Length: 268
Image (tube, rainbow, N blue to C red; front, top):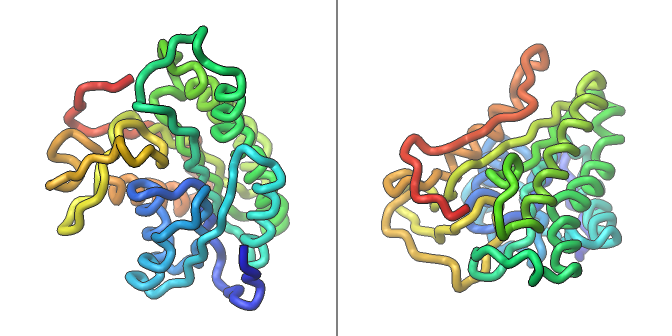
C-alpha cells in the first residue's frame, strides 16, 4: 500500500469498507459528492476510486484490506488515518459464498465458518476500534453497519452468514449505547432485498444477496436500472446512509430496515 500522508486533506474522511460495483460504490460516490475525502477499502484495489474521483472531482483513495485478518485491518487503517480525521465509517463487508446456494450444515467447514464470521463481525469490531478514539476526542462521528435479512432471522443453509450478521447487529447495539452519549452516531442498516444497478444510462451488475462482494459468474447484465424488477437502487440506498449521517443528534436512528415497494422472489 502506498504512503498517503503527503496527500492528506483538510477535509474529513469517509472510510467505506467493502466496495463493489453496486452499494459500496454508490455510498462512496455519495460521500465524495458531498465533499468528503473518501477511502475505499476492499480485498482488491478498487477500480472505482479513479472513476469516482474524476466524476465528483474529489480525493478518493483505494486501500487493500482483508477484513478477516487483524493485521491487515490495522495496516489498512494506518493508511486511512494518515489522511486525516475519519468522521464516517461505513462497514459493508461480508464473505461471499459459492453460487449463493444453501449449504448443508454438516458440510460447512469450520474454516469457512470462522472466516465468514470474522469478516462480518470481527472485521467490523477491528475497524470501529481504529476510528472511535478520534471520533470520541472530537465529540462527533458516524459509524454505519450494513446488515441484511440474515441479521434478523436464522436461515437454513446459511449458518455462517447469519451468525456473522447476528453478531454485527449486536456489535452495533453495544457501540450505540456506549458511544452515542459521547457524540458518535452508530446505526445498523438492514437491506432486505436484492441490490441492483443504479438507475440511469449506465449499466452495472446485479447481485443476488445483500452485502457487496460477489463471484464474477453470479453477475448478470441488467438492461434497466434498479427498481423496475423489484431490485433496490444502490444510489437510493446511499441517500439513506447520507441521511443517517446528517441526522440531528436529538433524533438519531439506531436501526433502519429498507426494502423495495415491490418484493421480488426471495433468494433466502
